[in-house]
Length: 214
DNA sequence: AAGAGTCTCAACCGCTAGTTT
DNA sequence: CAAACTAGCGGTTGAGACTCT
Image 1 (cartoon, chains in turn blue, brown, orange):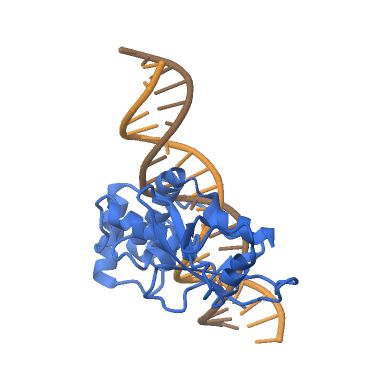
Image 2 (spheres, chains in turn purple, blue, red):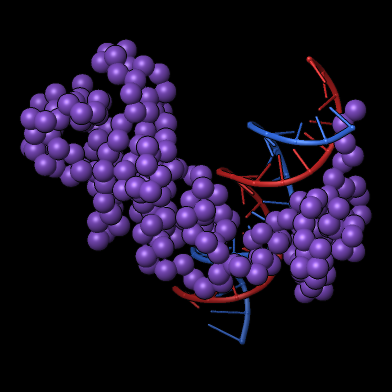
């Protein structure tokens, strides 16, 4: 049979942590480290479940956490990363040592999202966001059709360079001149008679608008 | 001053992939 | 191999802080 449950939920404390609980958890982890979160509350003398202890430690008590507000530069980087990774907060947080996924998610939901009016940052239902071929190049947005396009036959991923404007808007850099066949997206856009002239920068909304005209 | 509305963020919930028995 | 569990993730909630009228 399987293993023992992580905790007996009956009698477990919930809600805001007290300073005393924090102290107990910090002392225990500093002295013993963490080998199994299930055992931490028991050994540390806490009436909390292991999951709650893990969350409290990773999001608030870890000594390597940065407690200062997220800077403008970090925010710009978050916007760039979100545009190609989507809501993969832990992945985005991995680019910011000392920041937690919860912190970045909260910052996004309460500040950035409102400012940017974001519906266009999500791919259409037919596409999904994917990692770029080069993880060190955050200036490329990537998405892939979920199924092969019945009309064009394309099922290759789309890679689009982009930039953040001063207004905080995502602009895709689309070269619609003669040499536009390197990706299916650019090829399709060139084929659209209503697409703006060459060297255009367009919004993600516009990309799918023009794409849908085909 | 106080009540209402809004914002922030810590904490919880539910799910999934991977692990253990 | 199946069942039960753990750790980690993203979505959501709600209490307290803050701002507005």
